Length: 604
Image 1: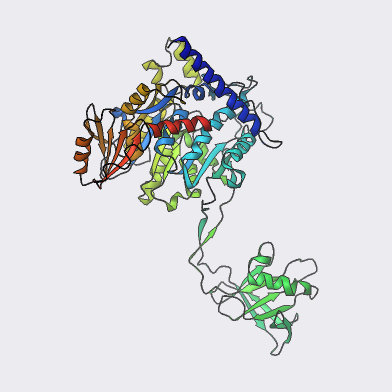
Image 2: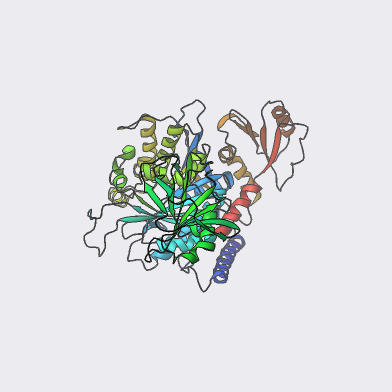
């Protein structure tokens, strides 16, 4: 690189920094979250202006159970790189994201710019927010229009995270905060604290208003509440006109209410309060006509032509004392009653026992907050995965792999074909890191990397799942294991021709992931071909088009559909060519990949 090129590169970096500062200043409001975004930006984000992350398959770690099982994915590498790649391969394709990020407590569990952040760091909250903003902004793009994200957090960064998510997902897309009991109030972990933490929190946001809230399904066939009978003790009660209806009036002593054993022919008493006052025709009728008669204590009113229980009338009971504020009505079993009913989920769950026993799950030790399988399955349930057996989920803070195991066990219950993408770096725990460095090992050394979270915790857990452990039976599944690697570029705003060619030659496995075709059937100096049971993916990566016609003719003879990626200097250069081959769909490369990374840098 000559001196002029070096100066241009430095100038572009300065311009990028100034543009971010201007954007941050313009976006500041009188109400909202403000932090030191520019004080110490994250290096991995800055590096991506001069590096392009791609994927490299680690074939020796693939798990192949054969059969027709769907393929799951594990990506080892910084999750910012993984999310950047997924913005090309899976943008708008994900149904649910669950993450358990670092809580940024006083312990050595959050690494920023290769340094452990502790309570002595003045900017620890700003660094955590920088870290989360970059990743959540990319994660949002992965969700489809009906998708949702769940985030576990504790009180340390809860308020900041809520405001950050409001900014990224929009306040109108906030769904709820669930309080999760994780330990017993007497099981004290740190006696020197002023208060003992018993609960954590689970934030839920949807991508758009197209998301459909899932509700609990309950049996609706029970007659346990239908226990009342009403006897009219006079034959000719007084009547009055109310709302064009002839209403019969029974004074106390002119009727009798009998409570007995449940029966489908009896009545259910419903107190007229809250939303019921306006929520149905009975509540509205009472509020419009009978509420004003509340001084007539314990009067009973028989209103004709009301209700869907087939009786042809409905009884209303005025408050039975001056101290009682609301009346009641009696209804029979609805004629159109369904066998089940939907009710909302509560925003509190007690998972204390599961969290207490989580150490045994997966048969891997994990000290940084392993989440129980039952808890994550509840997240899946609330996120609608019970009704979507083909869902795709992402966890980009995979840790020990609890999310992957929970999804596999859900599939085993209902024969689902849901798929996971889990992403984790290979970070070494603080104590092990210190010990390894004392022994002379450093990051990158085989001995050091073997102690990392991906290689020692997450992947071994997946192997335990397929082999079975403890009381858990073996589960069959397919897995592709990838690592992120980076390609050097001058700058994301101007990638040289040579760098575009290099990217195209090395993007094959990333494109295979995008198209869900993993069996490589051919590769030479001009092209690469992958397939699955349904289709082919082909990549012509030479700028020399000498062999292109020969290649397309070969692909055109296939019975299956083919997605053909052709190297081009611009966009849509070959979009309308090869139309004589009905099974071939043409895509460009590498410009669409570069465009995605430009957008990734903008979002970050």
